[in-house]
Image (cartoon, rainbow, N blue to C red; front, side, top):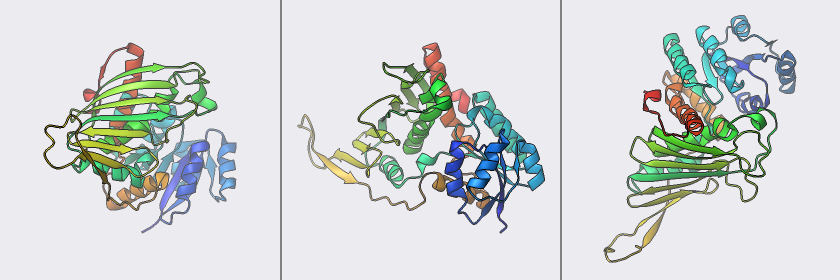
Length: 344
């Protein structure tokens, strides 16, 4: 099979992560780099030893190179224009999260993707880890019974500069989609509604709200509670968050670092016990795929070759972006937001 011809758009910080994982691949080649600042595209080509043209215009780059895949590594506000241009010109799109800035844009991107006959997948790199796969197996295999409560805690003191430092909702808009998408992946359930309270605590170095508490009702009847902060100094959680899922017969735990486990009610007659005895269950689920960005790229390219939708296809990922945008709307209005109509 011939190599996929890739135009990569956006040559900022995140593009380096993609280049490190994409360039060793033997099934693709970068045929053009695009950035609104041509000097940034030129610098990236030099940094990675790429012998390819650089452009400031996406459409021109695609037409000149006959590319069939586009990496959209631009800022979120640019995703709609870059993605729809690429789809209209016959490219499959692999994009950084989040899909778009609004649900209206996300829905239109899906419509154009379906009309084009191409694919559009979103980078959700935190799904690609053996521990989260093992944790998901503990939850979905019936080990703890039907889940009723899911919690994720994310507390990190991240001293960003640039656009995050001045965003209105830096945590929810830029980071929480990872944790929200993980919750869907772990539970197998989709969001129904959200109530969110955002705030900016004392000592924050962010202009906007860098902390949030969100309560999601999920399609299986469970409740997902997110507690997070990007300006929490000391005792940081993992970037993968710290998780607890409580079910009918026990609880599954993952601290985001080590292997997950569950504690379930021990067999035998315990009807007369106020606090029952529990047995620890280790996950025996094994996953040997590549980690992070590399794992997600593996899945995206495999889906193209096999003519199927990727795990992070836009029609699935819109449910995660609905959680983000719904949370922001809830925070602004002070009310619970229904999400069902946004994702159906």
